[in-house]
Length: 186
Image 1 (tube, helix red, strand yellow):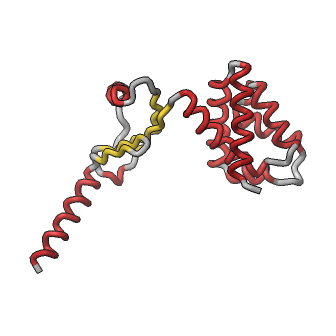
Image 2 (tube, one colour):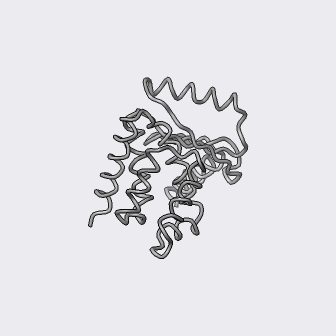
Image 3 (cartoon, helix red, strand yellow):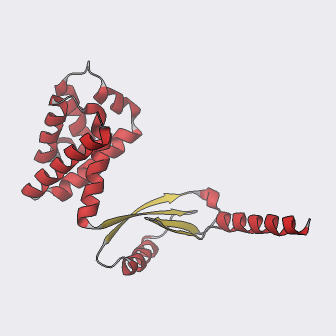
């Protein structure tokens, strides 16, 4: 059994079903929320994967993890299919595949911004505008993270593109250059 193939098939089916009904954006948002809960709460993951827990309880948990009573119909039907076919252990793989396929279809690039201190909203918007100029015709989603260990500045990653303008990164580069120069002297 190839987990990747099975996960992609379920993800592709979910995306097609959501697109047919015009709710792909809603399913995308709820799938992101569900995956976040699944990754952050090990008890939730273990309960969903536990064969001793009833399907009804699992459905309730999945609904609560997405949007409570507002879970879209497509995702609800997907939950029933997943539980009926006993594919609960593949949920994270399927959700990752779904998010990947959705982003590919909608031409969404994911970015990660790490700063030493939280950025003001206007600065973040200016940065997004600059990035959008580089990726014409695409949307960019940012995950922001505050990491005081980088001392100052920031690190921006989008796809294979990375800009390290952090003070910690500059110190590492200076240290590396210093060590290389001193090796040549000896």
